[in-house]
Image (cartoon, rainbow, N blue to C red):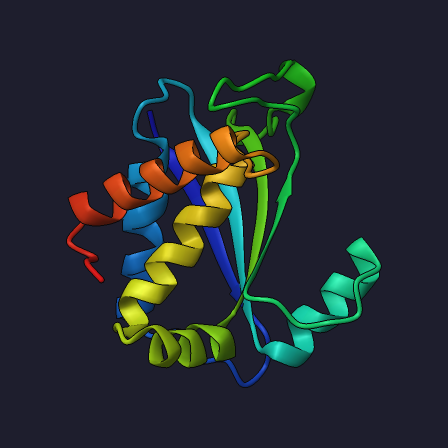
Length: 160
């Protein structure tokens, strides 16, 4: 398996090498079980930027920490795709995009008493799990997702 990804940022959002490495490591770990080549986009913004996207795409007029826009109709990690879902040039399955507020990374890390690196890793993991079909719409699904997030984060050394 190979995971290709593009990381984008709004003006004023500086992406350090460490930030890119966290995003790549977490995305790789979330998708390591797949034999298919996959693609995801990660867009880093601030609270104003994510609020605009939340309003535009979800009709919710508030900032949030992470938005996930899956392109596939997958369920519980089983990727449901056809050839139409593949990028013709790269030959990989297009999972979708994540949008993350770096302001929320900072404020939530402070609120929860852990590092910004751990908070970024958590938000990337949470978003990637949504891209591969996990959700938290009921208690059983939420518990499964929480367990997977913790397993992934602990395996990468991002402990609370």
